[in-house]
Length: 469
Image (cartoon, rainbow, N blue to C red; front, side, top):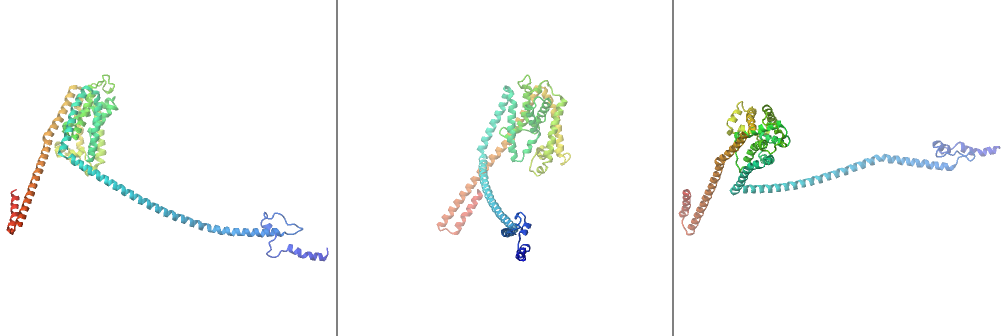
């Protein structure tokens, strides 16, 4: 090779081997990313200018995308935070508006309900007041008393007829009537806060008798217990507490029925029930007399069960309400009743603090003694019959005493009150008539030109006339 050739090739070699500063070569691109330019440079042709241009464009595009993407990623949390705050603000406003709307609607509905309830209550109170006024009229009271008396007398006549003709009906009649009367008494006593009276032993015995009649008719132990309790303390209460058969008084009729109907029902089951094979009440089979010890034991056990439950749930747990006068019980009624007499005095033997416990002890002794007589009534038919008839006569006698001594006095008071009202009306009418006459006389004197003395004399005369009246 000549020197000229070598000299002529020198610039080209320099351009290939020594690139100018800042120039991006094929080797640089291949070194930075072999995947972009995978083909090697041609040794004969040297580096290609086309890949160089694409490399520069690719590098510029990557730089642009990377720069803009970095800016977008930088701004993204700010935008997300702004959107979150905006959504939270909108949600808070919506919640506030919804709460306000719900509150307004709720107040409107409450106001409307209160207004409607107030109007309804006012109408009911007005109707009740008018009804009470109508019911208090003498004619209405007498009419209702006549109806109640008639129904009570019909009951007294029909019961013996049913016992003699259809004794198998008596358990159902007893259950139906005593259930109705006790439910009615509950609602009447609830209005007066007297419903604790329905937790007394007489109602407990009625429940146990119904359990025997329909649930445990085969239990001889339960039969002995309910027989002693119904023919013992329950029946003798008619005498002890002076139950009165006042036929026009639902309260007094209920009291008599609650104490007398259970022994009558068991009397029919024991002596008159048409079931010689004892299929309906198998406990009566092979039991001509009551076993004394076991019957007394079960009867006293039932009584103590009721007494303990009553003491815990009424005397102890309702102590504050009873003490405040919000509830009335038979114990507080009897212990504070001046008419109780000897019972109240004996119960206070050990002081006020132990009066209830003392009364419970007295009631336990009373229950045990009366149960001893009930043992005989189960054994002897005639004695049982005479005993029940005697109880009925006692209730009738007490009712007659009420009619003659109490009820007649009430009618007498009503007649006296009516006479006083009539006398007051007549006197008021007379005074009005005298006042009108005095005014007319004074006007006539003034119209005739009378002097002052004549005008003043007439009122004095009227006053003297009123004094004479």
